[in-house]
Structures are given as structure tokens and as C-alpha cells.
Image (cartoon, rainbow, N blue to C red; front, top):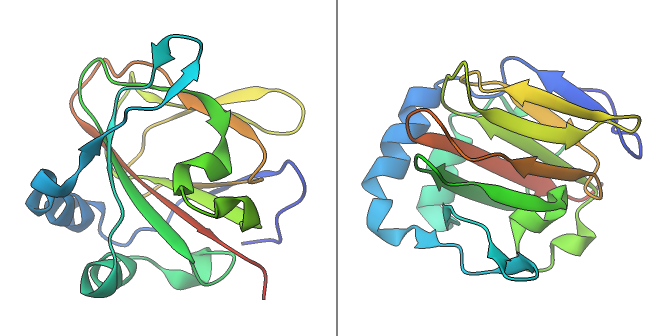
Length: 167
């Protein structure tokens, strides 16, 4: 994957070798997903659940990725689950990583599910681009780029967001 420019949107079709296997892992961790409680726009609250794997769980998720498709070694990994009606309000891509993610120099969002009605909207440096869900499809964005997920209309949707720092 090419080095990310300040507001680049770089798609990659093979970052996740087996999206169904990642969903299977995430389903097994379902009780550990926490519902989002942040309020980002006045009284509006995002609706989704997330889980940050660590240790062996983190290794299990990373084993299902083609690491050559990532800009570097991930420092952060976050799984998100969106049920029908769930959404993420506009935010900077790095906000999905939580914690000290202001230090992230790259962010890649990988969709694990297929949908003809659901997707994600990203800023590509010139305009907002809607990317429909394709299992295994990854999009690298500038960590400061705006993005959001509109309310999910199809079945449960899963994503994995990875981020890291340049070496």
C-alpha cells in the first residue's frame, strides 16, 4: 500500500484474508463488546458496540490479515459491531482507535461484511466518498480525515479499524 498522503483515501481489496473468521472471533467475544456512550454532537449519541482485543486475541485477529497490505505494524486494533439502526456520527478516523490515538500516523478501516445498502463515508481530500461494504475490503485514510457510518439498514455489520505510527 502506498505511503498515505495527508488526506489520501487508499482502497485495498485483500487486507483481510478471511473476513468470516474475524466475524466468528468477534461473535465469540460478543459479551465483551461495549455500547458506545459518547455524545459527539450536542445531544446526539452514536450507536454501536466496540471491543479492543489484546494479547492472544489481538494476535488471533492480526493472523487473519495480509500484513503486506497495511502501512505498518498496528499499534491499535478495534472491532466494531453495528446492528440494524446503529450508526457512528461524524468523527476523525483516528477517534475510532481510542486512547492516545492522536499519535496515529495511519488508519485502515476494514469491512468484514457484504451489503448493497450499508457502507461508510470518508473524506478523500477533495470530497466525501461513500464506500459500500465489501467483505475484506480495506480503506486507508488520513487519521485526521472525517468519516461516519450512516444508520445500518441491512444485517449486523462488522468492521476492524487498525492504526499505527510511522517507524
